[in-house]
Picture 1 (tube, helix red, strand yellow):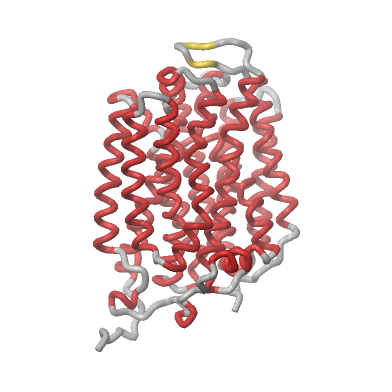
Picture 2: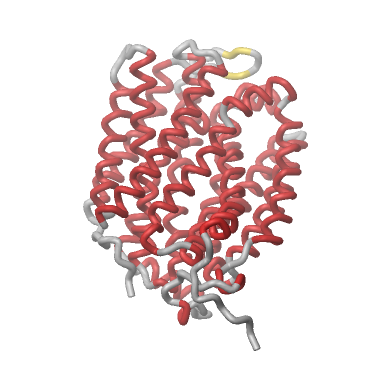
Length: 430
């Protein structure tokens, strides 16, 4: 006979422990995502590369991350989060070690590629865990909390990583991260379970009879993309998180240092605070969306605010530094609206395809930084005036303004596309 199930749902401590180990991988993924921002000079000098090559090196993380989102959603629906998270942490450990030891640019690119593709499983797996271990009315709030945890990883990849890099060098620090990831893989396999029933508790998953998904993978993907909302939500979130991850995740520190005269540590502090703003915004917008049972209204408010504040920050000349920082932080707070994407996309499709839909939505979110980080680098190189310091190129204010215009453009497109989506009112499609 099988184990007798408790009629009670899992206790909150257990649910958050299981979910939290997935969140730990997401934390390290965000840390790796923004790490190049505080070591731009070291990377450009070590590998003798231009801004375009640096943008490409950073974006190798996003190339594999984006490519893995749909497969991750499918595997989350079929194999379960435990296997995905364990494998992801182990491969991320290997990628971190390759990046740390890379003697040449192509090996550094390979390391970033392995890291991005492996940690790509974290977010979708976390949301899959949330749909089983937490009541459905908390889903958008859990999505916001997930973004908060991940963004704290990005904060750790700001000033703390900069100080560690100065003290020990970027290579030893990245090697140490690989050891942490290997230990995390062991912990996930030991503790995490896909559903509370495996621990003797009642599942929160509302469609348990449909947990076995059809074998025809392509048909499932086709069904997800047959919904207009999903097609739009591939493009919209890139305009919400793309600007902040392109700026705070790579180009903000060199801009604030070379154009605005800040110290590297001071600039890293600003970009870290921007990521904190993103995290807090995610919590606020997720709670707001759940409270009013609306997805479009909070999303539109966030995108509209982001568009306004960043347009002022980039195109208004000679802003005082405190005002510039305030506008960047306000825009980052508004970027948190992107967490609404995941509840929005999940509710658009049948529950059996929630993992696939969430993966598609997360792919859309990461398309922004994947495209914008190298694009800004290309624009910077085209506007370079020939200046360099210590073997690293230095770009002037006009070059950065040209590059950052791309951030505002994508945000504007996303804001307009949002009005073509259909409201779900917080109700899961049958």
